[in-house]
Length: 128
Image (cartoon, rainbow, N blue to C red):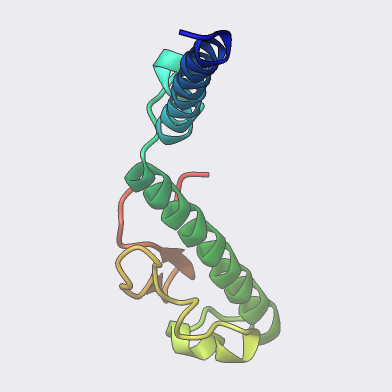
């Protein structure tokens, strides 16, 4: 066997080892991205999954929309010196049908005309 063939074989093994090391590093990075920084394995406190993240996003959107509807109720009270009879009365204050519904289940928010309080039909969406 000549010297050139021996070098090519050694270079082939080195290339194979480099490719394997690169694949392992990419695999570890992919695992970390899929598990998320909240994973107990990588130093966090809770496991984060896409479903949990989507639910948290919907709850945050619900709280934001509830805040907008409640501000519209306050503006209505200031102008009319009375509570609105329904959420439809808040249309001049920017409350559209889309804002007046929970983004999680698309049910309409509940307005109590006696008190002027607005609530989400889903438990846990109103905690700030």
